[in-house]
Image (tube, rainbow, N blue to C red):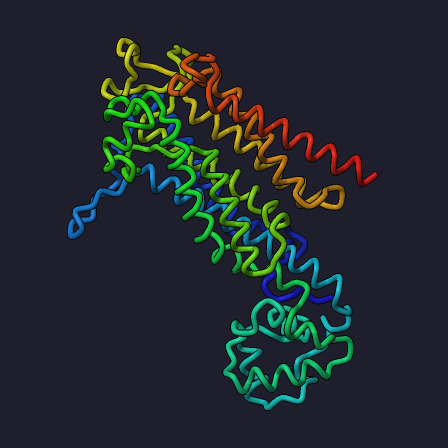
Length: 403
């Protein structure tokens, strides 16, 4: 069967072809490696401010650029995976002969046929695939769409329901870019709320020692330039946004959560580099060859005499890269062995394990305090243990029941 429009063939003349977004991801990763090596050699960290917008008198921080960049790259990968899913569903339902049947077999005006071919649609399969995703992208006016729908409905092997609610429609890549608005908004709210309730010790530099201090200084509630976003709150908020969006669009929430988990892992690979520019969330003092240099004004109280620390952000970035590789490989090569929701749960387990390990070197962590008693365990570690256990039980139970 001919290739469906929008699906890139991975082989061109027998040679493997890398899609452009992988080249961009590789290039960004190479740039981060060069930047880190430069820092190790010189001890210099770029200024927090990337540039200033004069007419707005607004500073744009590297912290935000790296987070937004990570989100964008993760979203690109998820949109490509969604397209791959849509193609798989399409090929399961549509007869193979439609991939060879020319659109010239449709009783359409010559100018309409010419327009479709100009827009890249040459076979019934290509036309039907895009129609199922969103016919608006065919580039036809209302009359052209009506005529095309009438003719497609008459094609042997085409079910009329495909023209109104195609099975592959749920994997329209546009859901990534539309849904991310919902997810990001609620993720930021959730991440900020988590941080406000569990502020890190480094916030003492701006007068924040407890959650109550945020309400004594309301302006600090909305000051995101100095960081102050809790990942677990962000995950919870983003998950709620995903659930709301999928409910409104009537698409499967868990299935999309699996894809989202892959994108989130990749986003964290690059997003964590924002901490490098902010010189925050670093680890204990160390003289290891890969230790980072923290400028005096960013050192935590009690550690002013030290200059080199564990690059905790780098550890989390590399762990996220490992998690991304595992999740992506499972999805693309072993999907038939998975149940819907497994990748989401596995991501949470992997992140929880990584966070537990990371907390063994981090300095800037708030510990659990119950009834005035300090339990000497980081809040993030406690939450991570609960998450890992809960998700592990969930996966085990679902797969055991399925046997």
